[in-house]
Image (cartoon, rainbow, N blue to C red; front, side, top):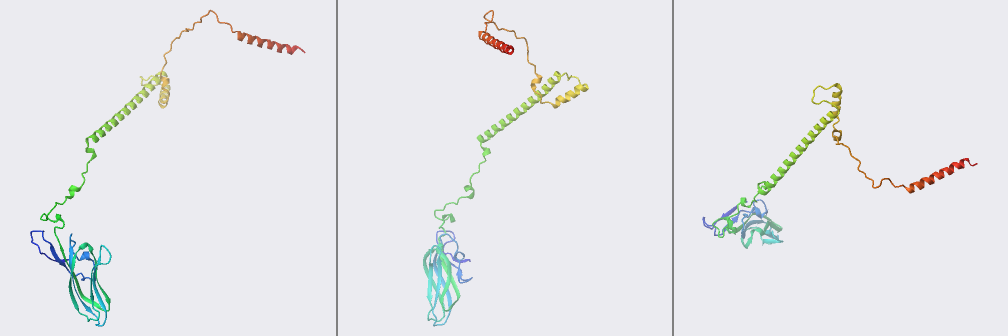
Length: 285
């Protein structure tokens, strides 16, 4: 809900406090939420509760009426005013109850509660309040101790692109150059292998008697050529020749004749005698 505000300060300065009174809190029922009643102003304090209502009852009936607000920061009530109508005929009552500048944060759920027999009608509850517009020094440059608010763009962190860093870029360039050199080396090796295979094919064809320089192959040479092309996996060693020559014997014996092997002679002689004994046994009967 809105609020009826009474300004007691000059139009060009924020140095004085602002005083005001809310609209009727019971406009939508006899229970209300204070955040919908009081202006949500930093530093606001309630200084009075102003109410009026009419009771409908029998004179002899007991009746209590409570105008109250719960303590939003604790238990119990931050404000409770009780009117005793017991033994009194129904009537209308108006009150302005001063409170000791209670801050807005304490004011919880408000309500009108009836105990006993009777009814409350035509109720109005309003709250008087005051606040210092310079409670927050950033409200206006006219406030004492004003501090200019931080701009949102100043609070945003600077985003640095790592690619803009000179050292990072140099490292990326170095790695790119290395990759390019490695790729060029692989291409060179592939060309070298292809040239080697081609040379091997030519040497093998020459070794087997195929005339490569001539474009006119015989039927046999064409078939042999095709087979060679299909068998690229032949060992490279087939296409190479090993240099040969004559190697002269350079072994020199220190004596003119070799020494006799006496052990070999004795073993041979024993074998021969044994053989002769076996032969003689065949005829000795």
